[in-house]
Amino acid sequence: MSSTQTQQARQFLAAVEAACTDLDPAERSRLDGGLEENMSELSADGVDLTAELGDPAAYARELRSAAGLATGPTVAVQTGVLAAAGAVAGPDVPTVPPTRALPLGPATTAMPLPVTQPAPSTRKVLLVIGGVLAFIAVLVTAALVLGVVFFGARSDSGVVSVTPAAPAPVAVTVPDLVGTPETQARQMLADTGLSVVVETASSAAAAGEVFQQDPPAGVAVEPGSVVRITVSSGP
Amino acid sequence: MVTPQMLKGVLPIVVLWSLADEDAYGYAILRKLRDAGFGGVGDASVYGTLQRHHDAGFVTSYLGDGGQGPARRYYTLTPSGRLALEHARHDWHALVRAVSAVVPAAEGQIA
Image (cartoon, rainbow over all chains, first blue to last red; front, top):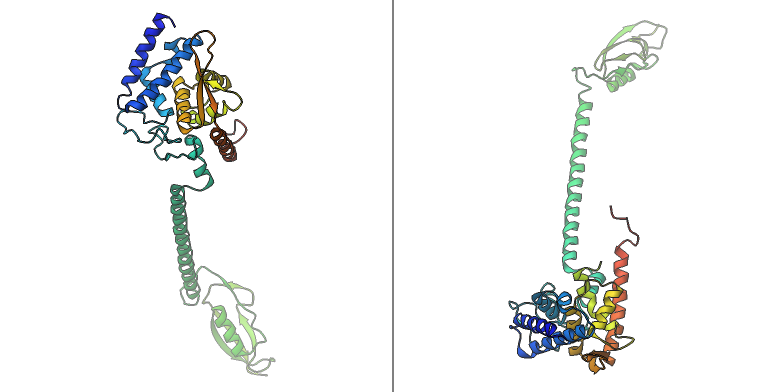
């Protein structure tokens, strides 16, 4: 290592140490060991220290994160973290618990979990969506029921409005009454919604049977119109 | 590219993995990872991860012959490190399957 490189290495080491003053001496010494190892190997492989290592503060953060230590002076150093294999990789993934069984970082300890089973937050979201859908279903059902009741009532009233004298814009067809008994003719006209005027006259038809009508069968008239029928009194 | 967050997640596995076939020193592992496509991996990440594996008992180290210049510290997997590597391999494939199930395999499917 040239003297310039040694100088650079010392400065870099000092800057990294300055960024690790919050760590206890044992941890700091371990990190220093790693850095010295790093610089020594860079030098042995003929790599330029400054270009390779970059900013000392950033290097310190990265080293602490990778080594499983808190990455900044503001974060409390976890005691026992030296022995904990899968310690938190950085303050941005605080939910990963330190675990000795699995040494590997957030990818192996944290990621498979949400993949294999829905996270609580996912379940909560699904519940909310289900609730909203159920609410919408209730609203739609209520609207359908109300609609049926409302339009049903309207059509009922429409039927009712056919029979009174007030003319509705719907035409009815005059039934064929010739040959029917008077009572049946009256009933048929009433069922159709027509008024009736009955006359009696002597005819060849059987007594009590309609033998003439005006208007004739098949004519379209307004509901409530008068149909004149002539009932035979016999020959 | 491998983002820093992704890298942080897989680095412990790939560092362990890079020792599966032969012992290596820190900077050699770093070069290996960069050649493999982890362009953004920093020195501190590799050396820090090695320390963590050492603390966990997954690797031990010895000073090897540096040829010319200073000696290099070589890392070797312990039996518990090999066991951890097997677990990691299993977990990794589970992760790949899960990710593949939701990420389209072909490019250009995202409008």
